[in-house]
Image 1: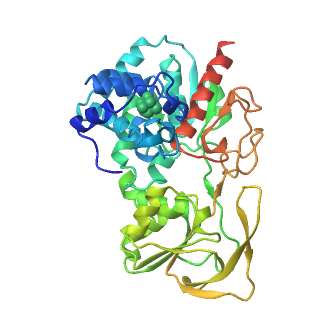
Image 2: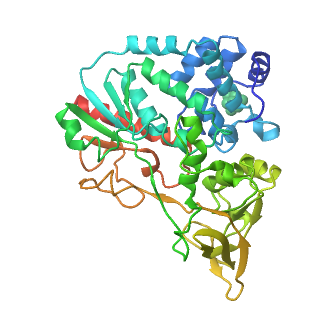
Length: 440
Ligand code: SF4
């Protein structure tokens, strides 16, 4: 993130907002935050009401303002951006959230919300503590439900904690969100994996009336090539988990110091791939090379991430596909083949085609494969009667599955545009759906 705003910077920037009667920025916000209103409060130096305004629609201000691609969401719609620079909405939102943290006053706001809720003696279980689960838990607590979250790890935040590197999202910020939920009276149980330590049957026996599944896509896909089981070949999700371990208060399963001065090859073209490539460089890798089967035009990563990667000398090897990982116990090299692009496919991108006879070898002490992930059907949904496939849990417009008391959201409901705010939106939809179901 760029340099944070001081109070004076924030007021100056807020003064540029036109307080539009028909604010386009709100249309670009997945959570429909009342952007002009919170900005006007900043302009008037009324930071309490700026925060209150944001809390009406989100508890994730400190997260979204750091990791959401606002230049593609709210800021892309700001009318100030037509002829000049859009209002810097993310930095203003980050300022308000940080102001309340520095002042140690966010707990007070949570207490007020808790006290104004009409208490319902109805228990709801939330599985996972990622963004959609956080949003769902918050909305339900606001309207008086007794909410308990069940987290598989020993730390809070799901993908926010183990999937986003510290340089993009400091873990202390994630822990603030945990503290806010606890201040709302939400209980969080750790080391509770759904399908193993806590099951649908156990929750029903315990008197829970609805269950929300924010289980994400936790099973990493791997390239099916020779040598994929060699040492030092990891999935992107596992690698980011290791990189984030220390900051999450757990030991890394690999010696991250070993990456220093090594050649790291990252396979993929999305945000996970670029996070891995940058993290490898930050760990002191001699080279960090991203191997992608299409061209830079088809990369699915944020512009700011790409710029940081270039600054750190991450190399981009386009139109290449690994066909073999070579080594004796540990990976040492990878064999790639060059690709060319054919017709446009169903994703709107040109299909990569192997160019025969173009094989070449790259040095690789570590290979990190970022080619997507799927639902963990082995544990989480084993024996479940829920309707799902590899990537999605089928839900209706209320976020309700085929089992009426089970709702789902987050990555298993999003096929594209997987931002924190979009995931949170699915949690909000499910919370409204749960309330509708339980109010019948
Ligand atoms: Fe302010 Fe831009 Fe939103 Fe208008 S569109 S209210 S100028 S942030």
